[in-house]
Image 1 (spheres, one colour):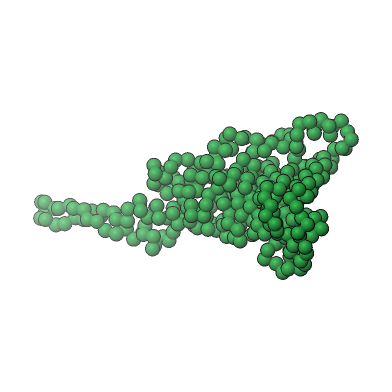
Image 2: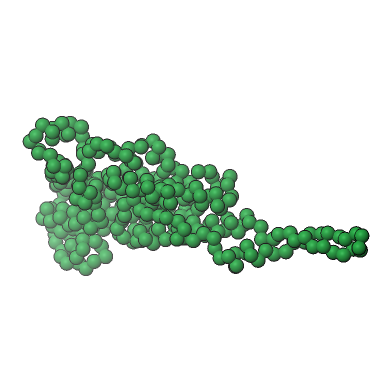
Length: 314
């Protein structure tokens, strides 16, 4: 896709607006509102570009009588009302742009959110079908339990947390990771005691055949500032509620209680938070530039669109 600095034709830009974009979703904002904001800004910029480049004046030839043998033909400029925006309305509207998420994020989750735009919808469906691993930084708070395990809910229980140490939390995280890796083989229908299971294990992690069952591939403690702690979690088929419930269960295992205070998706496959489009750049130039960057990632890692084996490549 050409840069907006080189192409100023709105129709050309619109025809080439196809691909994947990586957007940074703010915490507390719903995905549908993120989508609406981006599409509204794209249409606004396209309509402004069209208004700036399409002339509103056209020349009308007039024949003036200067005498029977010498009529005078001259041209004058007049306003072309048929093409004026007040007559036609905006040419580009949100309904003209097809857009869908690769995998959604909950309202309380921030971070990497992928959209497929126009012909990029086919790519978004392929990425979704291949289910690449997403990585999160999940922060919990010990000593307080809430109704839905998230910070915007009623407090249901308080408990002592002074006995919780980072070594105990790290050990519990390792135990959870081991139990979920065993679950990988169960979801693939492979007997843990079979030769097939051994051969698969030698190749590394595998993708589950079921696209609804959450599986954690990695979980480790990266920060502990009592009562707050942060875990880095790598998972497939996860949801915001599932991760919040996991923090709640960890609190119980630690003989205390806990709830989730923050969730941040830092990576989706090869798409990272560093390459995500920030809110101030949710406009046409930002989207075009970001779409070009994501296209390069897909070209460098074609397995994101097509995987033929159960081995996890991420």
